[in-house]
Structures are given as structure tokens and as C-alpha cells.
Length: 147
Image 1 (cartoon, rainbow, N blue to C red):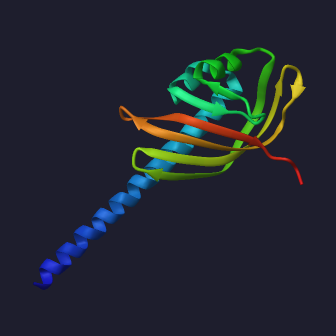
Image 2 (cartoon, rainbow, N blue to C red):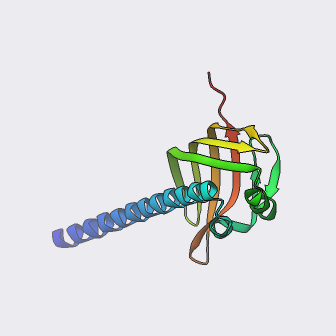
């Protein structure tokens, strides 16, 4: 009987550590995907962002404007907009099965239509695992106003 109880406890602990490992993998995967997205913004790599955004992705920018995937990719190609430096920080991932919420900040040097847009931005991205791959389905960005 004692052996049976020990075996059940061992199986429960193994299952719990397996679940923790899976959560850690999601955190690493999505943190890496966010870094890839930022790197793509730096080089205007539309192909990479096209793979990250789901076909039905919708984002809301720091001015409150809404963009779908096509508009966002077109804006990335616009030569009057440029990101020359970007660093993500304080990234937090919360996973709920095949959906995850990623929140973080980036500090960037950027411009749009000749106007300096550099600063720190707070963002939230919602990802969904589709066909074995994580894709962004919704995003919101807010510019952090210095105190």
C-alpha cells in the first residue's frame, strides 16, 4: 500500500513538473517571438512580421488608430517610418492553453513621417497557437509619458 501511495505521489509530481516545463517553454517561445518581432521592425523585415501576425490580427496603435495586418505591413514598408534602435524589457507571459497574453515595454529610437517618435512604449499582445505555431491575434501599444 505504501508503495502504491509513493508511486501515485511520484506520478503527480512528474505531471506537475511537466506542466511547469510546458509553461516555461511557452514563456521562452513567446519572449523569443517578441524579440524577433522587434528585430524585424528594426530591419523592416516584412516577411518575418507577416509570419508572426495572424491573418485576422488587429492592432491598436499609441494614437488610438486601429490597423489590420495588411495596413500594418504596408506601414512597415513606408520609407518615411524608421526604427533605428529597440530593446524589449519587463516582458511577462501568461499562458492559458492555446492562448497567451504577453505584456512588456520597449524603448526605441524611431521616427514616422520625419517626426521623432522615440521613447518607451507599453504593449500587450495576445497570441493563439494555430496549427502548431504561435501567432499574434491582437495588439495594443501605449506610449509611456515620462514623469
